[in-house]
Image 1 (tube, helix red, strand yellow):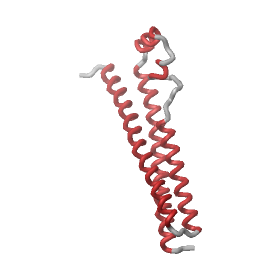
Image 2 (image 1 turned 90 degrees about the vertical axis):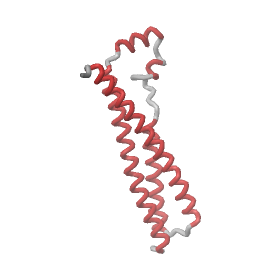
Image 3 (image 1 turned 135 degrees about the vertical axis):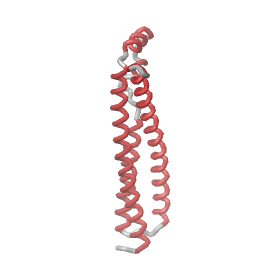
Image 4 (image 1 turned 45 degrees about the horizontal axis):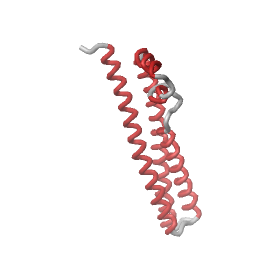
Length: 149
């Protein structure tokens, strides 16, 4: 049988693991977006694009840049000092001991969970933008290759 403290410790570890997974996914998506931006730019320079392809591709590129901004926002360090090492950096050794011993684990799980949800929202929005941008870039290539005016 598990005690409430053991369940709280497990919940804390689970939330921290979710944050780490989100940051890993975000890093991979940032690399993907960068590669797509570089590739699309290289291809666009070598193709003869008509106005429709320029507009469609430009909107797609803008959405990719916006997605990259959201991804960067989701991994931006929180230095407000509410918990973790930013808080500890502002305290003396005695204050750290007092804070660690008096910390409410449930409040920490709640705070970390809110942080994880915020990261997931940014990640989800970025993925949605990447999907729309991909469709627009494919349409731009089809417009260019198809010769639509």
